[in-house]
Image 1: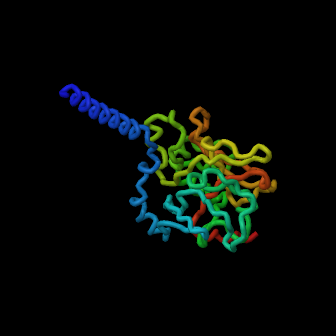
Image 2: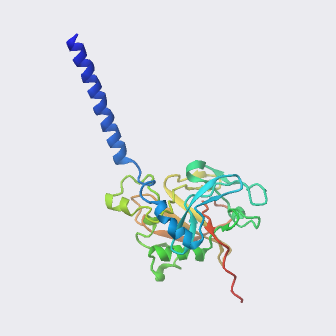
Length: 256
């Protein structure tokens, strides 16, 4: 009887030790995405900009917001499937909606009916450049068509799949609260690709060649430019990317 009690007691201790190891391991490998940025500490900055703490789309989805420099951003990808006038978004790509939001074609982004909630907009190329400037990108690189800004993208990425990052790199992740995730994109014929590998972000700016300015950010730890941001133009009828909404009305266009 005593032996059975000891065995039972030992089993309980063994389970307790096992649970401790599991919990400790989980804590060690838990993604610091939710804890790396304190959104409560960002409240004063948001309020100074007139940036609401949350935004709600017409379907009732609530989005966290964040103040970065003099801009107020969604801290999550847009997920709405209807425009402000109630018309349905055409041919959006549904992936892991709760995690990544939707992937949109440019015709939905450019639709005058509006995609972002009232008082918000899809950013222009200049809006993204203002963000990049605040993140520390050299002015000499802003207009380049290539990977630019070494270590600039780390502060807007949310920790996701790049498990090979060093502890030092993890400390630099998502320090702004922008919390971008690698939703990938959808390509013609091929379908949705690169989920968990990179993110594409739309702007509303059409280049002189008729293509649209966009951004790429990669989570591939082996990519030589995995800490930069790729600025490029893309065909506006064949790609689907993520959308981040920016608070406020666009600045007035300059007179010709």
